[in-house]
Every structure is written in structure tokens, then in C-alpha cells.
Length: 600
Image (cartoon, rainbow, N blue to C red; front, side):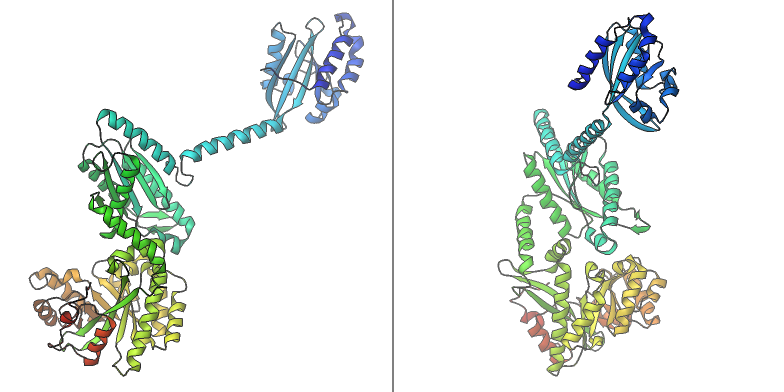
């Protein structure tokens, strides 16, 4: 490599050339003058013989090596630079015919790597050479830093910095290239759009660092699951896209989606926490569901939202109907932020009744969304969206406050006090200020705590036993009623159930549907009822819709029931009328009163 040395050094070399064209016999006479001249060099300088011994060194070199000048003179250069790039260069220089040479070398000085530009000039019929060294360490470090920055830029332009997966931009480029190839070969490719279910709960409860590490662990499992030759990318947040290049039919894509979901089932251990996650997947297939990348991704995304609406931890293949459904979901998502301000949320109440006497023992509050354009919307449609965008906490607090206001209003109107149940979402339950929020709402509304019943699902209760027990204990001490909802669908143990300070078990409706004809279901419900009574707990059975179901529950000595057999969820005006009756007589037909209103 041709290296240009600064003008001062070039002029100095020319000066030495004219001054030291010495014969072999005159060399010793000139040594003193050589040493004097070496000292005038601004950098390091040495005079080296062809047998690789130092004939002279300047003070800069001696200071750099931390050795006296007189100790260096006469020593082999290998004494200080064994097998170094410097020694190799000088040895090579004396073996060639050229009179001048230069090279950038790296050598260690006191264990510290340093870089030098070495410039060598032969004299005395090639018997010795003047060797100059310019310290270029800072420049090399700058070049290295620049190269690293460029490499990092190139990497981050293609890959996600957290997970190491392809990023969205690179995935789109790979997708476009794959589509061209598929078009030429009349092939098929599939897009899987994956979203982790309830991932935000991890961030809220354990922090973003744990959430990031979970994403990294999930990414590794996805790499293993997609198979060689296929691609996986982090689309953003907790969303991933998978490009399947080895599929021929939609069945192939479905089978791979099943593998991906199964891959996520085993628990993850992150920073000592054992946690489970699941995913929902939307699937689109080229060329049937789109001819270009944007359409395929959009349609896979539409299928994903449909999968989430169906209950999560599942997959859905795209159909044209989903575009209209996705438009509805998009409309809900965009208008949800103003729904509270515009008073669009309403509360319906479903009574809980004594199984023997039909006396109303309480009500459960259920939120509905009276959308100005889409009409009355079921919580199964908007609650998953609220959980994803974080508004579930705000909506949940609104529900709590208004339920307490309404309950106190009934009492102020002279109606018999009954407990009012409110479901707590997972994110709401994990809020560190939950207990304080509830205490403040009770104080604001004046409602006595024993008339508020908070319901949490069995699976949520079992997620972190210590945390659950701590929160429930504080609520119990406050006087609030506690109910475990959907009991029988989770994995609770008797020891955990005994540990929790609770008042009521609500048996999931799935055990009731065939209870009159299925002895197995009847035995399970009977066992739960006996267990609850043994623990001095109330029992409420949800989903009662027929007289046969009711009679079967009566035979099992079930305390309370809830379901459409008695009443669907009703607006406040109708439930107020029912509460005034205290019991539900046969002549009271809420179905007729709701004939012009949808119910859920």
C-alpha cells in the first residue's frame, strides 16, 4: 500500500540521504552524528543493521519502550519484538532489492496493542537502514470504531436488535423475492401472523426486562419450530411473522401453525420466574389469499384478530369475510379511547338467585358498549382489544366506580341490599394500586364494602399464589367479598384454595350444559359443592338455562344459581324493577321486556 508521509519527514529523509552516504569503513565515524540526527525526528526512529541489530535509537523510541537508549544499541530487534509484524517487516525489507518500503504494523508495547506506520530507507550498500515509525493507533481505533458502526448499521437494517430475528423491513424484502420465485415456479407460500396472548401482563407485573427476555426465549423456539429454509421475523412488540416456503396447501400451513403453538406450550423460566404464554395465529396463502406481500400480510393480520376474538391460543385461516370483521375491529380499536368520555359504556346486571326459593341474593355487573354506529357490542368483542391496548385498566376502574354508585343508589331508594359482583381483569388485578383504588371508590360512593363482590378467574388466582394471597388478604380485611370465577376450568389445588381468603366459588357453565344427562358432570359439580361447603364457602352455578338443570342442582343442594332460566343480563331500569320484587316470580318475564334489546 502506498502511504504518503508528511512533508517534514520526507525532507528529513532526503537530508539524511545526502549526509550519510557512507562507506562501510566510515560507518563507525558517523555513529555519533547519526545518533544526533535521530534525536531530531519527531516520531520514533532507529538505525538498524542488515543482521537486525539496533545501531542507534532516538529518545522517543527508548521512552516508549521504557528502556535506556544505551541498552538498546547492539540488541537484536527480536529482543523487543519477537515474531512481531515489525520484526517480520524489517527482515523482509533486507531480503528485497527495493531501497524504500513502508507498511502499517501492529505490535504490543507493555501488553498494549499499538499501530505504527513504518517507513524504511536503506543506506551503506544495503548494510543498514533508517527506520521511522509514526504512531497511528488513534487512527486505527477510529477506523475500527467506524467499521464496527457500519457493521452494526448494516445488521440493524436487517435484524431486530433484541431478538436477532429479521426485522419488518428485511422480512418484506425476503417476501417480495419469494413471491417472484413462487410466481415463476407456480408455487405457494404462506404467511403466519403470530401475536403472543396477554404478553402485556408480563411487562406490567414483572417489568420490561423480564418481558424482553421472554421475547428472546420465544424467538428461539420460533426459529426451531419454523424449520430450515423458512423465515421468522419480529414484526413489532410481541408480534411475529413467519414466511413458509415449503408449503403446497393450506393444510401444510395449518400443520406448521399447530407446531408453532405447541412449541409455546412448555413453560419458560426467566430470571427465576416460571411462566407460560400462548399465541394466536392468522394464516394467509399465496396465491389464493393475495398476489402481493401487502395483501398477504393484511389478510393474515385479519385472520389473527379473528383468532384472538375466538378465544386465543388458536389459529384461523383467512377468509374474505374477515376483511369486514377486521374493519369492525379497527373501528372499535380507534373509537375505544373516547368511549368513556362519550358515555358509550353501559352496565347490565344479571341476578343470582337462591336455587330453592328464587330469592335474589345478588347481581353480577357486566359491561356493554353502546357504540353510536355499530350498536350494542358484546364484551367478547371489545375486551380483548382493551386488554391489548391497555385500556382495560381504565375501563375496569370506570366499571367499579359506577357499579358502586348504582348499588348505593338502590339502597338509598329503599331496596334490599344485595352484593354486586364485578369481574377483575388480569391486568387490573396486577395493578400495584388496586387495593387503594377500590378503597377510594368505596369511600367516594359511600358503599359498604360487604356489598361489593370482586370476581377473579381460577387461572388468574393460580398464576402467582403468593401475590394472589397477599392482594386477596388485603381486600378481605377491607370487608370486600371475594369470589373465584370459572371454578373447575383451571388447575387449583386444595391447599391453594384453603390458603385464599375467599367467600364464594362460581362453578363454570361448561359443567352445567349436560348435567341432567351426564353423570360425570353431575359428579364433578356435586364434588365441588361438597368441597365448598366443607370450607364454609358459598357456591354459585353459572349458565343455568333449563328446569332440568335447576332440578339437578337442587338435588345436589347447590346454594345459588345464575343464568338465562331466570334472567339474561338486563339494563339498570329492568334489574331495578326485579330487585323491587325481591324474588323472581313466574309472571315476571324479563325476556319479553328485552324483546327489543339484544342481550349477551
